[in-house]
Every structure is written in C-alpha cells, then in structure tokens.
Image (tube, rainbow, N blue to C red; front, side, top):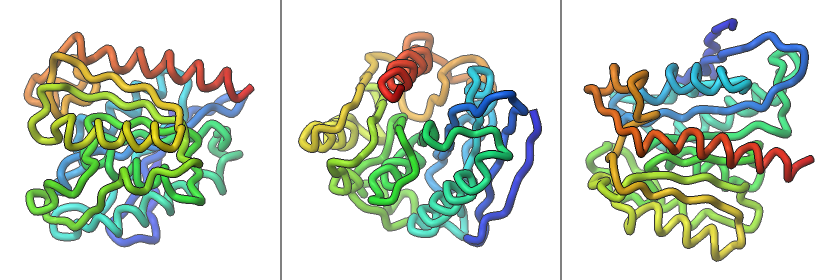
Length: 240
C-alpha cells in the first residue's frame, strides 16, 4: 500500500490517500472523521482507512480545518475538492468512480451527509456513524452548521446509518431519527441500525480503535462494520 498526502486548495485541508496497486479498479471510500472540530480524530481516520482497505476498498481521509481554523463551510469545500481530485485521478489511483462513496463519523457524519445531498455530488453511496444532523451543538463545536436533513432530496444516494440509543451527544430523536424520516419522505433507500449498547464516538468499537480511544469498545456495536459490508455488497449487486 502506498500512502501519500496531498494539500487541497482549501487552506489547512489535506487528503490522505491509501492506494492499493491493483489489477482492477476498486470501490472507493472517502472518510470524514469526527472530533468536534477540535481535532481530526485518530479513531475515525487512519484506522478506519486501513480496515476498509483490507476489504478491497481504495480509501481516503479528508483532513479538514480544525481548532483555530475550524469552519463548517470550509470543511465542506475541502470535501468537494477531495472528490474532484479523486474522480480526476481515478485511473492512476485504481479507483472505480462509479463505486465511490463517503463515510462520516459524528461531526464528520454531518459533513458527509451535506456532501451526499449536493445536486452535483460524486458520492454514489453514503454511510453515517452517530452523525450530527441538526445544529444543536454548534456552540460546543465552535462552528455554524445547518440541519442537513433539510438537504435530503430525491437524488440523495442510498445511505447506511448507525448509532447507539445511549448517545447523549447526538440523541437519536434529535439527529438520526430526523434524517431517516427525511430519507423516507424522499423515497431514498436506507438501512438503519440503532444499537442498544455502546455510545457516541466509538469508531469501529473494537480493540484496534479502542487503543486510541480510551479503551472504548463494544462487541455488539462493532457489528455495524460487517453489517455495512453486507449492505455494500447488496448495493454493488444492484448497480450491476
């Protein structure tokens, strides 16, 4: 695997590329980590990229502006630039742009949802982990966001969502439930898993991410990952 980082035109923004040199183009996954704009969370970035790369994805991590440079709008620009770069360089990256999706965690889930709902989105599928949906914690994060459920439209790509009913930072009724309702209203296909265990910010919820996440693991919540892989295989088959 070849790891490279390119600087995006948007200041303080980078794209980490985990490129597997393959004989056939692979599906791609653009990863948007969480971290409440105070950091790009380790638990949601490299470790998620490597895990998905082991399942024959080309993987990419967008490092958007955080800390003193934090900005929801600038983060959205960085994600758009990342997709433009990836589609433009798909051949050299052994990437199938028709199977290029986005996955976001927490604040990154809000950004992933916003990008997936763009009229010109290049994300063919989306996955949202315990996402922020409404701008209810903007003050805590130090940014001005939006209710991304209001952006859902008839062209929104098929979406996989998961979270924990124990989540107190982004409670189900205030976030995931509202987004799922918007998807249903627009007849967008989605799959939702709201686990009875775990909590917010658990990434893969296994030992691999737990060791950089205060040892936070949960074997039941960790099932979101194999469930996503099953869902993705069905999505792939439907595209054929």
